Image 1 (cartoon, rainbow, N blue to C red):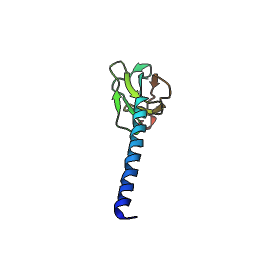
Image 2: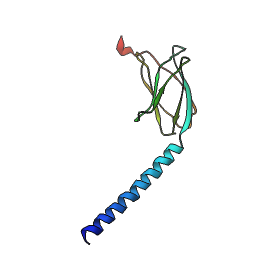
Image 3: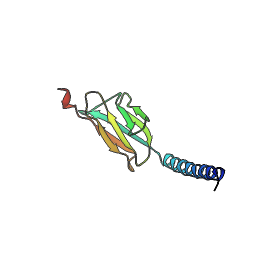
Image 4: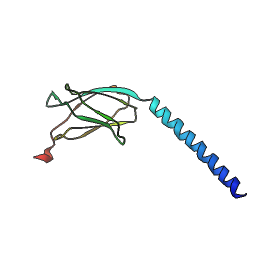
Length: 109
């Protein structure tokens, strides 16, 4: 087998795998659902709390009432944090409403 044939086979193999990866990525994105929730501490809303999808740069912050909305798939984990409070991680699963109560971080005392 000559070099040109080997390069052609490698190129075809790479193109096939790129298509497979792209297809799975599109399927994962199409399974994204809208997740809403409220972040509180001591029964009070936490405006400005950060809600991130773990392992990505996708996220949002809570509004004045501590509420958020984010698109995430069932396998995503939400990372909820606020300065001075312990961070929580929650698997989305089939939940469309996730309410989180954060506790003060004892490490800061």
